[in-house]
Amino acid sequence: MRIDIRCWKHVFKLDPDRDITDEALERVCLSGTHAIIVGGSTGITFENTVDLLARVRRFELPCVLEISDLDAIVPGFDLYFIPIVLNATDPRWIVGKHLEAIREYGPMMQWDQVVAEGYIILNDSSAAAQLTEANAGLDARDIVAYAKLSERLFQLPIFYMEYSGMFGDMELVRRAASVLDKSRLFYGGGINSLERAREAAQAAHTIVVGNIIYEQLERALETVQVIEESAL
Image (tube, rainbow, N blue to C red; front, side, top):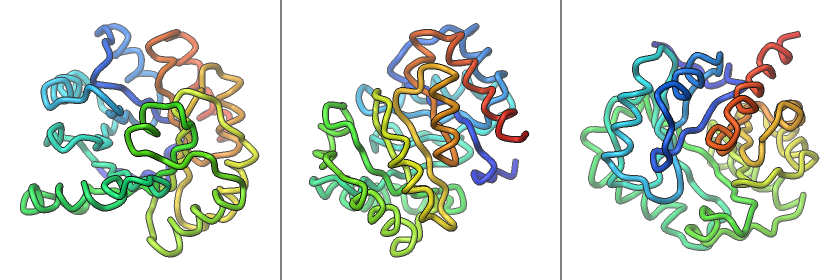
């Protein structure tokens, strides 16, 4: 399966540490979303990750592992997203854990399946921000600078703005997207309705819908409409 992330407008993100029924998972995977990302900040293990992969693999759509724990790296995903948390103050989340992973798994890595993400975390109360000790208090100039740093200096294919549970400032997202020529801007956080999905899809290249899957499945499924709407 040839996978081109530049075609993705909408993806669902599933957390291995959260329960989802087979029926709900089937509806998510058959919704028309462009891909499934598997990942989370806490409680991620090899066992719950491989279990979720096996369940998603019954459906024909790309399945990506966003790696947050070296012990939960599971073979068999189509792609592996590697977050480089650019605004982390703990350097382990910028380069340290990445070095550990390559030292441990380097001989087994298929580099054509690895996609690095320039990640900024913008909700200082989120588990991800606390885990990485991220400096989330960024203004517009900071965010634009991070976007340019990610694309032009580090040449990362994805610039990810993560608000982790809260709906972010779409004007900031638009400003960051406007300075990217090659990288794709992924936005995640607080997309809990079709209206918010539309707002985010107008600002970002790709939207990531996660928590609402577990809270109000019907509203989560409605967000996939942005794919058709963006094609009009």
